[in-house]
Image 1 (cartoon, rainbow, N blue to C red):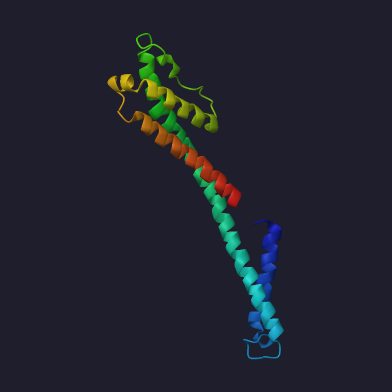
Image 2: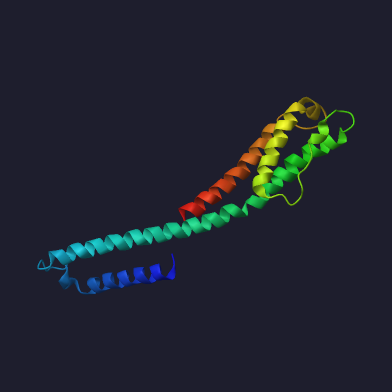
Length: 168
């Protein structure tokens, strides 16, 4: 909520406070001479309630858009260090003995997150070709699924951050 919106909301709340202190002007305060004023005050209460709810939701979305981004480093590290590096290390050790396994290599160190997701997905597809050989040489049987799950978590984190920013 920007400062203009906050000042407007504060002004509306001051009007509510004035009516709360001067109940003789409202229908609820005992006087039925001004039912139109009571209707307007009810509308004002609805506006203040909705504006307060939206401000709280906006604040929550701002926090979520930042918090979701904070786990991106850990998720990137999981994809790169735990999954992709392990596959590339085994593939590097098998170069020269298994034709074409050199395609399983690591991306450059400064790769952005979106291209990393694409690269990791492509690596999973390439690793499917050499799955039996890689499993024979020490990788778990579900290493491709583990990589795909880690990539999906990273992608979900990026998508959730975007949704939180959009909702904000």
